[in-house]
Length: 271
Image 1 (spheres, helix red, strand yellow):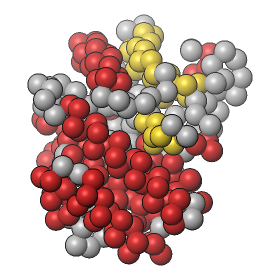
Image 2 (cartoon, one colour):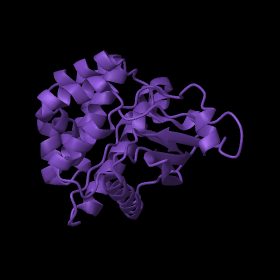
Image 3 (cartoon, rainbow, N blue to C red):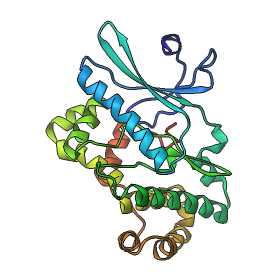
Image 4 (cartoon, rainbow, N blue to C red):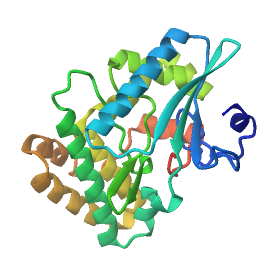
């Protein structure tokens, strides 16, 4: 692992808020994606993070979410602790974003239907869990094969953290000094980033909004599909919440859009 980190090449994505994942060009980890996160000398926080990552992967799997094999490590370099996630690499042809871009309209809608149904299934399965659990199933965090969606974004582990604690994690692990500086003066703006991840309706509306932005020429057809899906495929309460957000194409919050531009985060899959 340390050798792979020393010899890391170009990242395979620069979109991530927390890291720029890479795939080693050779060696025993060449079939893995490696994600490194901002380290430090706070062992209690990082050990808790490791435990909650394990719990989150277990809950995702229990709830029927398909994941590549995923391991969470903490490397110790003279007391400086570096969190690392090692994940089986996925065939780039399976990434959902380019599939939706390349598909004809019926094919794109079929991909969205599969993803949206899997999101609804997740929330139904975890509804009675006592922990505060979230999910970030954006188009860029999915792959899709013949068996359905594959989710690969397990950081931060959205389990067991209060809204305030998750807000602190967002600041602690952001790679961008700008975000950490802004968080010091506008902490509520940073905390609000997570709110969609903990909302069943928000995650489905977020998927729809991403699809409309990805295929603006098909926006009306995507919204028509989304309204039909919400009315006929979702539990009535959840369906009503989603429908209430579909009078117009869903938009990202202006603050987050501006932040992404400032950080130069490109709209590619965050593998």
